[in-house]
Length: 274
Image (cartoon, rainbow, N blue to C red; front, side, top):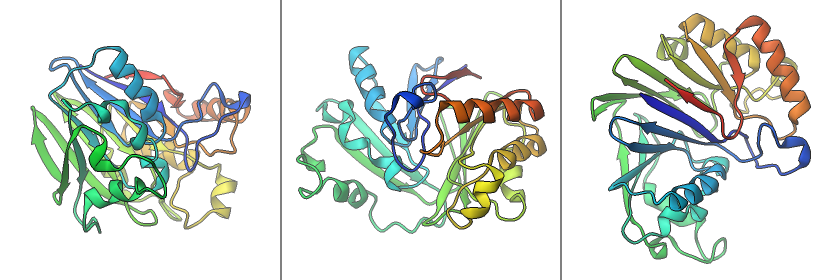
């Protein structure tokens, strides 16, 4: 069995206000936990990873190597990393993974070292404490611990990648920071085929999307259409716009569920078992 828990569901920038408490204000971070191996992996390191790190320390977390995979490296997906508590543990090995063909990255390490230069942060990357292994995997598929991991390049400024995890007949698909264009990208639909849980971004309404063409994001309608055409069992929509408060998001969730019953707008702390 695998558990998936949201620690950050907001897109673009974090928000902190009493009107944003239900869905949360932290940027993207998802924890995946395999019970059979007691193995935790993390996808993206937005500000949500800060709370996750504190929880792991409080729980006495011990894992020989902790994997953190990345869809891409825009600020809202890496800005929590300098505050990730396990990264300051000298006995912790952390693998930073970017997987997928066509990534335009010269040095994965330099991305994280760059945001921790003295002009921006008081502690440099090489002084954090943990042992880091930066893995730039130019393949679209890998098999590890009986799990198959696949990636797909998505339309997004600077590029982003969706992830598909298959384990024992169970399928998890994460497609965030993806723009479909005038019609759905059939490659994304095929990538999400048969997902037990599809996590798909939905930053905009249809009207907002028209005003933000080229920004690299999707609408609620598009996320639902992908789930429908892919035959996904459950849809969790994330990467909420920072201007959308709880009242707005609850209204949109109700509208979405009228079309796709097992559709949810992700909330911080929300957990799925698949």
